[in-house]
Structure formats: C-alpha cells, structure tokens
Length: 477
Ligand code: 4AD
Ligand code: MG
Image (cartoon, rainbow, N blue to C red; front, side):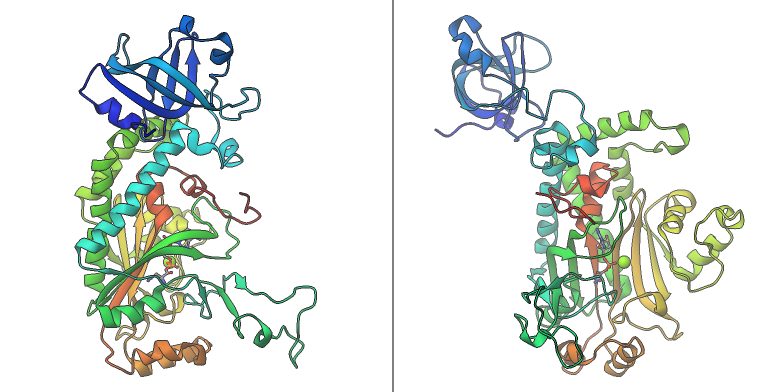
C-alpha cells in the first residue's frame, strides 16, 4: 500500500483523515507515543497508541530504529508541540531493531562517532537535514544552469590527462601488481594495460568541457572528481563532486559575474526550499558555538551568513593588492603566519585566505590575476608576462570555494607554456586542436560542491557533508 509522506501530513490542514504512514521509530515514550520519521521532513509524526488495544509482545518490538507501518486517523494534536498527531488503528512491524545493538540512540552522538557509522548516520536528525540540503543544492545547480541556457555535459571519469598538472592522480589499471609486465626500461608496460596507455581518475572535467563549450557555447559538468593529495584537513576529500561551467566568448570579468550570480542564486534557492532544515542547522551551530571560547565564535548565525552572501557583492581584489595587504598585515609583521608573505609570487595558503576574508574584508572575496608560476598551464597570460587571468573565490569559514580562469586561446602562447612546464604536448593534441580551429576567448571555473554544502549547512568538517567520505586511509563502506 502506498503510504503518505509524513511531511505532507504535518503540513496538512485536513483532520479526521484516515492515512497510512511508513517510517522508523525515533522514540517510544510511556508505551503510548511513537515519534515516527520517514526522512521526508525534519519533524517526526507523533503516533498515539492505545496500549490496551495491542499485545504486550507487539509493544515490546516498538524500539528506536525499528521500521513500522501504521494506519490511523490524523487528528488535531491533543498535546502541545505539534499541530497534528496520528491515532493509531493498526500497526505492523516491518523490520525489528535490536535496541541493545542499534548504535543510533535517542541522545546526542559526536560527529566522529557517527563517521564510523556512516551507513546509519542519515537516520539522525542532523545528517538527514544535511543530506536534504545537499539534494536541494544539487537540484538548484542544474536549475540555475538550465535556466541560463547551459547544456549539461558528462566528461569522462577515466582519463589520460592531468588537467591540473599537480600529479595528484589515482591510477586506473588492470595490470597484475604481482606480475607486472615491464618495458625495456624496466618500468611497468602500460601498453599491455587495459587502455594500452597510462590512465587515471579525473582531477577535473575542464579540458573536455572546453571542447564542448567550443561547439555548444555554454556548458557545465557536475560529477565526481578525484585527488590523491595526502591532505587530512576539514576541507579536502579524495573523492568530491565538482561543478565546472565553461563558456565560449567569456572573458575573466564575465566569468566572475557568472560565478557570483550562480552562487547567490543556488543559496537563495535552498534558503527558500529548506527553511526547516536550515533553521535546525542554524540552532545546532549556535549551540556548538556556545561551547567555544569567545574569540572563536562566529559573528553571524548560519542563516544570517547565507543572507549576507546573497545580499552583498563579492569583493574583487587582484593578487598584487592582496599580497600588499597580507605583507603589511599584523599577523605577518608579528610572524604569526606559518608561511610568511614577503616576496611577490608566493602561493597563498589557507591562513592567508582566511585572513583576507574573515579579518580584512569580512565578505566573500574574488582574487584575480595570480602569478603564472603558481597556476595551471591553461590560464591566459596577461600582457605583463608575469600574471595569468585566474580567479579564486574565497568564502568565510571555507577558504577557496571556486577556482577558475580565462583560458589561453592563443596556440603559440599555450604551446610555449606547455613546454615551459614540461607537460607532455603529445597527450594534449586534441586540446591544442581547439586553438587551431575556430579558437575563441573562453572561460570557466570549478566549484567544489562539498565546500558549498559546508557553507550552506555550517558543518565544519567536509566529511560530514558527503554520504561516504573518502580520505587518506579511509574508504570504508
Ligand atoms: O581549484 P581547482 O583545482 O580547479 C580546477 O580543478 C579547475 N580545473 C576548475 C575549472 O576551472 N574548471 O578546484 C576547483 C574547486 C576548488 O576551488 C575547491 O572548491 C574544490 O574544487 N576542491 C576540492 N574540494 C574537496 N576536496 C578536494 N580535495 C578539493 N580540491 C579542490
Ligand atoms: Mg584551486
């Protein structure tokens, strides 16, 4: 039988309605009140049992975690705390749960404990709320681009190229590790491998997305991305989801404008669609903040922070301006930065990004025109010969959320750069072809989806905003 979603019932204005619901028991109090949740909403449906009408043996099986089907009458709630409740008529136990062994008890569990129980943590109020917001955000991403006339392209997950040139790739191979065929140099012979060449999991769909932008005009990807960087931080995953729009005939300013419009638009969408969940996460964050020392507390609540980003323009600052601000900053002068900022050209670390966003500007910042030497080969060179048309968007509490650039569309300049950086030009023949046949100025960026979910939910650790996080030494589930 098709059950009605609890969310629908909680919002229903109808009374004395006969309905069936299915869900999991959150709590069972006084042999009388079942708090039932089916995942559709933050709030539970209170189901009231007349215990005299049920066998003792049935009542005993109504334990936290058990799955039930209940048929009953939806009525005005007799008690406070909820508008409606369900007067239970018939109740069947679909799946028992051993209360002694079920790890998700009706009490506060630490996020660390729940990471070990990633297969069950979505049954907690917090994780269900996060994952509903995540789902709404993905939908908002597609909605935004589709309404803007972009086409969704699926770029390959297995590739032969290293788009970012950082060498942080997971190898894809079917060669026998115990009996690896070797070439004349004594190295693994990838000619005998599945694809007849070295392949790996993609670190970015950008290069392939560029080929499609130069035919379809405006495109975007939204898919899994893999990085074998050994970073055990609260912002890095080995497997994450990235959104990469790529647009023909866009310069860097057009690119920044799109990125800003995109981020504010999807945040507006979830603010509208996930009110209940965001209110809960806002309160959760406020409580967590209370237990921190004053100096570490967030000056704004979650919803306030989201609204602030929507309502205020992002501050656009060149690398050179940012460098001067950092060089003259108090923490730099007092040698408080782990990485001192003394010479133009240094890469900015997260401590610097956070200083700029959280201390100096107090709003999202778009940094642009970075030194060529700290950026990827494909970025368009400026006339000063030192900087490239790169842009990174930095967010409070997150750091870098977007990395993008205008792409080098001039064949000779790009070839020169590839050679300077010792990148295998042969591998990129198809990418260079784009500069041979109808090359146009074009731009794009990549937004780390989990970092956006972190911002929208206020979760401090990126491992808590993806169902099954992959990090160094951890690929359980
Ligand atoms: O700055 P990145 O490396 O840029 C690129 O990959 C470009 N090809 C994008 C483009 O222009 N199409 O990565 C883009 C974003 C980062 O700003 C960050 O938000 C996220 O991807 N990101 C990660 N998120 C989680 N875990 C990791 N290990 C991440 N590495 C990057
Ligand atoms: Mg980057």
